[in-house]
Image 1 (cartoon, helix red, strand yellow):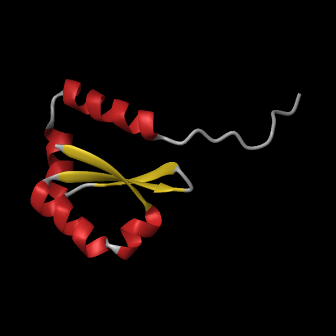
Image 2 (cartoon, helix red, strand yellow):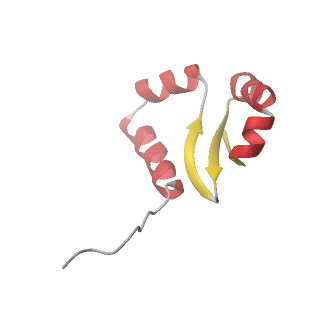
Length: 79
């Protein structure tokens, strides 16, 4: 399984090609906007496999998602 990162504009402009890559080549795409990861595009068969996967595989996927998740730090805490 290959995972690639792509800018949202590039994903929008090449959606058909990316969708073909996801379905035909089992590629996952992490879509970024303003350099922050926003979404993951994966095939239905990949999603079904993740749901049926072992706990270890789900944890590995969760680790990948957490590593790519944006860290938002808006404002400051009120004391």
